[in-house]
Image (cartoon, rainbow, N blue to C red; front, side, top):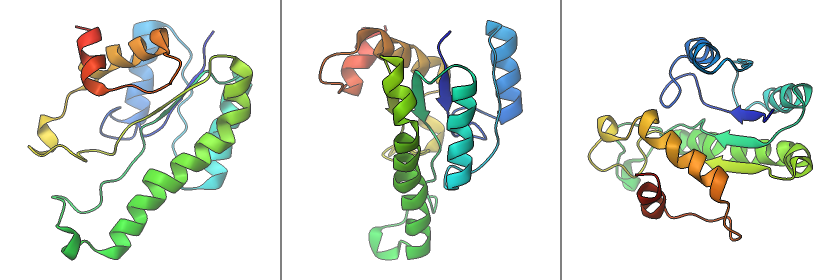
Length: 164
């Protein structure tokens, strides 16, 4: 049985954590362990990896946790530095920390994969409400897991066309 660690299920992509876990259990009959916490906390990252190890290993890490900071996004000249620091801690430092923590299990799986998503509405000029929902994005992720080109790099438009 494949094991995945998906962060950031408290809102946005995943909805409420327990509600999402219950929905996955009901729809797919799979085991889901919901672990609320902050990926910025090193102890929580260790707990996530330990939980995956307890389920038999780790095949997929989806870094979905993230913060955008001020919304709507201000121009850089008006960007509060504290908000930027918080965004960098969550979106870059914590993600790298979780990848580093997960590497032994991912490598041991033989097919370990990391998917990193951008936070909330980054690069969505029309606004937060215009981003695609999970039902249109997840098939693309599944395609990534099946295809696995040697370079490990994907271009979103190519991915969207592959699952239509």
